[in-house]
Length: 425
Image 1 (cartoon, rainbow, N blue to C red):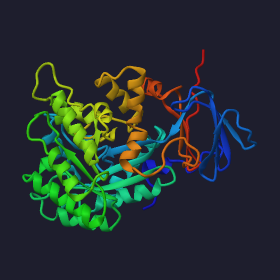
Image 2: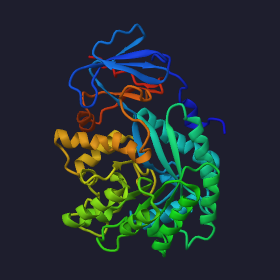
Image 3: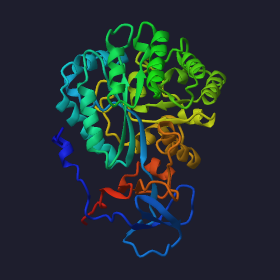
Image 4: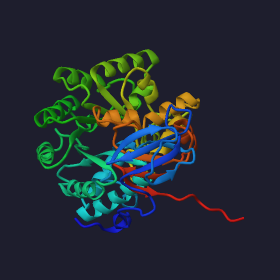
């Protein structure tokens, strides 16, 4: 599919940043107090040191924070930007699922492509370089969204790595044909498979069938799970048990799990330790979880956001992510992971320098481990030169100030450059 709409505005190569062999001087790295220089060669980080001797073209980092690209572990590109086609009356999860189901019957490949491309462009400008998107594949959506997102993945490949999860949003046992469609999508380019047990009358069967698809294709699984505030009836123990029984540790993720925000500390810690031991990772979606949960309360409305940093402290690989942008699940958003990290820190009351650094890791190194546990990540010699310069001096400050990304490189190639704003007085 040719580039169209907003995607056509995405520049292929900015002309004002060096490429290939270059050095970024005077930057701050996570965990280091003194300024460092970063030398890049052949798409990888060649050297790190103070005042490196290097004749290659240089960028002055001016003491700002240099990190590896941010990592979006959970987003729905296919249904972004449809808020104008839907009505929000109750603001509930059930309403969001129903309104989106109605809208997606009218999706076209070109429509999905343009909306998704706009969100990907925004994510890139925010410093994101890896992304997992869920794509609904069922009798209503057909394969239209899937074909569009594959085209988006190809279009933006020089700037961002996009992973596609073939997703059953509306169930399996109650939606004949969906399982066979997921199977076909996994044969035709989907990277993993995802399920949503809470929309299926048979949650246990739904979980088992998604795991079986994953086994058949040798891929990871990612569930939308336990999306309510009733502390009883959790499906998380069943996912953990299936993970252990199938030896799928390190290849299983769960998103939302807002039930855990309603659990007492002892039960929360116990399930967290089980998740860590089984190799089940977790993504918390602050904007959506805040917007949709607690609707039955008329005062002291619960936050409904599971504390990802507490799970991380128990050894769980955890992340926070965007989920939805401008649709009935989340009628706002801009694909900025730094803004999402700031929102999470506010809700989780994580305000100390150490806590803010931990929150940054939930969109950086911890999120990278969730998507690709064995792939190199970070500003280290030999790693891919996937680099972002932020207008901050430390990871915690970047979260606290919602620091913008100023420039970035993917495998040593320029991706974006946001010149400083100018004031006149």
